[in-house]
Length: 155
Image (cartoon, rainbow, N blue to C red; front, top):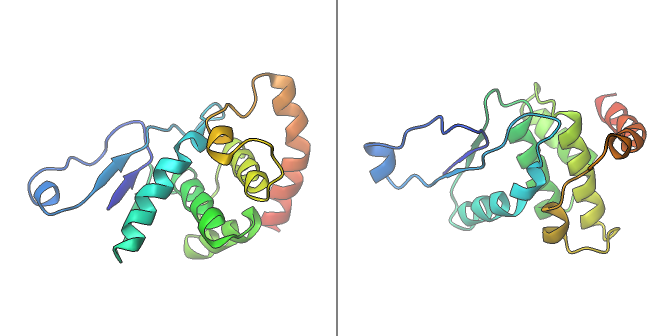
């Protein structure tokens, strides 16, 4: 199983891969401050869970393995192991030391944590499809607490 978290399909499934039973899924996401990556959480979770139930592995990749794919891995661990964002981040960081999800993605992971901890009135799947912030003021107001969390993770 391959989960590609990029805008472009970077792997061409032909020959052995296509006929060899390798399941492939693409989540078209960019590594930007505008990308709503949480809209793909449910799809990613289902894809990974299907593999887990079949005792199979999943390769989650993006361009450099630094921001998008770790974000998906952290989100999955948070949901399916019941860990906090910080705990899941540290688990993924221990496995791949170069991870550094962008601040936008960290904010969306924080939203996921709040949703999973029942601090929201929306069902998680509905909350994830919404944009994280619509104005620069909303982005700025959320940065202070997020920077404190990011600082806590990195230190």
